[in-house]
Length: 52
Image (cartoon, rainbow, N blue to C red; front, side, top):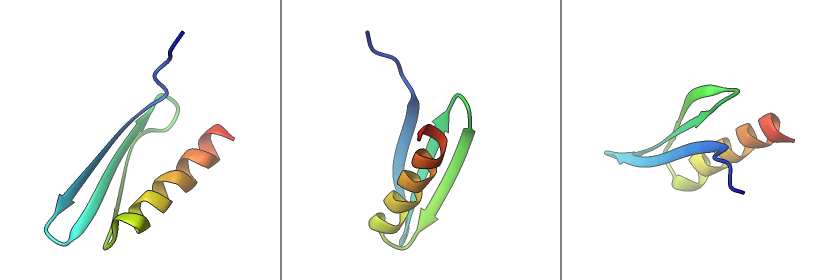
């Protein structure tokens, strides 16, 4: 059985990367940064706090 635990979108707006993360517990959050790695790290840290 599969269960959707989050919805995650990545966009690039000019020189800035943006991630939009939605979870049932935390709702919608948005992260931005100059590099994709910075944004991905922010998302991973947020998900770790919520699910671990």
